[in-house]
Length: 135
Image (cartoon, rainbow, N blue to C red):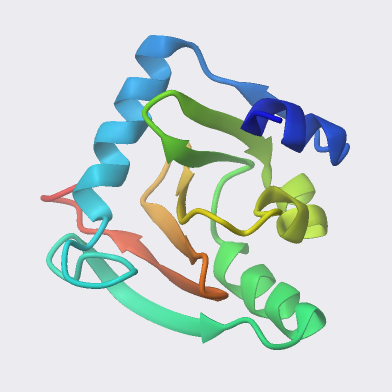
C-alpha cells in the first residue's frame, strides 16, 4: 500500500500537496535535515529539543508544548513527492497514525512559520525553529 493510501486508511484528514508545493516543502526539509545524524541540522535550526518516544501520552504533551506557538497547518514531508497538509489539531490528536508503519523519517514543517519537527523511525522527535537566515 502506498503512503497516501496508508494515511487515508488510518482515517487521517490530510491533503496531498501538488508537485510545485511539494518540491518547495521538500527543499525546506532538505535544508533543515542533518547529514550527520537522524535529526535537525544545528546550523539551520535553533532551540533544538529532543524527545524519546517512550510513552504516547507523554509524547503528546511534549508535542502540545512545542506546537502551541505554531500556526494552524503543518506539512508532513516524507519525500519530494509525498508532502501532506494536516491541521495542527489533527496532528496532535493523531500524530502516531501519521508515522505508522514507522519505517521512514519525516520532517514536519509549520506551513506559515519557522517551526519544525523531525520524526525519527527510531522513535524520537526533535523540535526547533528554522534559523531566519538559513531555512
